Image (spheres, rainbow, N blue to C red):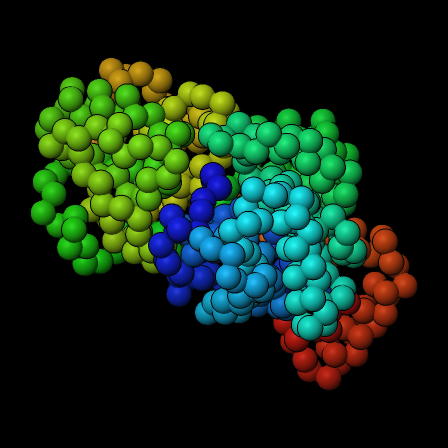
Length: 431
């Protein structure tokens, strides 16, 4: 997902964060990770996506500090300081506040952020920790920190996004040098990053099936969608340069009998360029917990992505989310949607407005296709955020053990002692 500013990000904290399942805990080794410090370009309270799914699970087992981009004030009266936002799931969101004078002096800004964060780490006794990066740009304020393990979770090719920092590619190379592990948000991205790091692993978009599965049961119609006629063709996600605006425009003009429901904040593009036909409805951003109710009211869900540099490596999380809600899906030929969803004939693929319209016509009847539903549910049964999270934990623990085998042995002995005392794995000591 793209960067966002504090000013653009309405508070949409979710109170429905998923927990690691009991089955996941039973089938895994005991959790023995130290504190986690995440450096992110995405605001925790913006939209609920990959970082929130993963770190709400990490927070079940230990301390998590989610460091956002600095907030610059419009004057120079403020002294640099750190703000801590406690979220329901236990994550501590960390925001450094800076005066206006530092906005245009990147070197000075990063130095001040490093000092403020170092002071906060000392106060909180954050000494043994994993550094987890979502943006290479955070290297500037964290270069001199000494984590016990460094993870780069590359969920997008940020250098291809609108307004990308000119230093981003250079800093990514520096991050590759520091990283012990590289995770990628999709198969296509993995195929690119494995050429740049020897310990890269693909962890494609996953699914909270129980959450989105609510759309298959009784749910009240949201008030702002209730008056929209049927059939409804929906999309949710950040509305930015990745949305194929012209495709939406053509579809809405060619098919006035369909109502197009667009859910999500408009970011980095001028809202005036969006199609404004009577059958296109922009409902704005919604809380994660509200999405199933909206999905329940759609006949077809879409992935209206453009074919451009910003979409070359994306792996849309909404693909399995739509399917878990029971919605037939039509997508443009995004590679990580074609593989596996298109290849398995779970999602229809179309690359122009005419074919997209034909695919929507077919999708309008697909709910009655018992074979499609069975095959879809069989595939969804093979993926979950719990499995993704556990796979990452296992790799991290292996790399830590390889770095410090004596500590790993000691931790294992402590865990054995805890088990003999009847303690649960969740209360195991952290190394």
